[in-house]
Image (cartoon, rainbow, N blue to C red; front, side, top):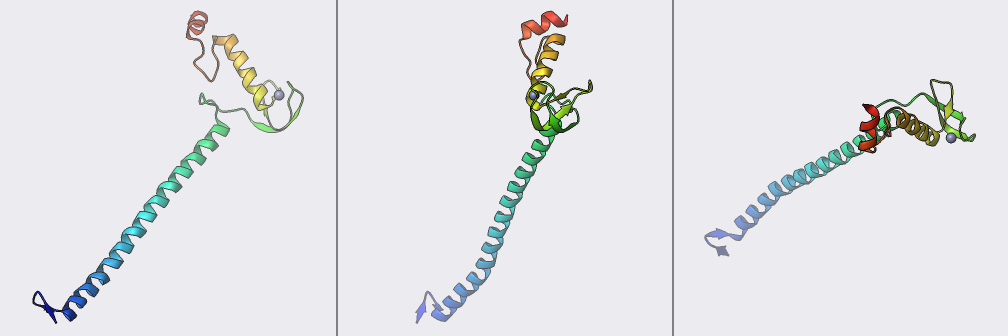
Length: 127
Ligand SMILES: [Zn+2]
């Protein structure tokens, strides 16, 4: 049987050959897409981990936290997995450290260390 001047066997041979070419090409494209998605996911995860590691060591304003260890907080007198050993010798839990830093910075320049704070107040006291 002939169709448009080519035999059925020729048609099947053509189909088979195009499938033999198409299937590996499609497989390669799919593998490349999966690899790209994996790479993007891994990069996103790594960046999140790096950001988290950085946030443990550095305050939001970029200054490093003081050295920390397990112990008692001198301010609220409770035991913590992590207390900061202040240069003054005082040991503070993360919560007391933040409130202490805020109080100190407010007293010095009239702004919180983590926020821009009240601009009016900061300007008045810094001049
Ligand atoms: Zn405390």
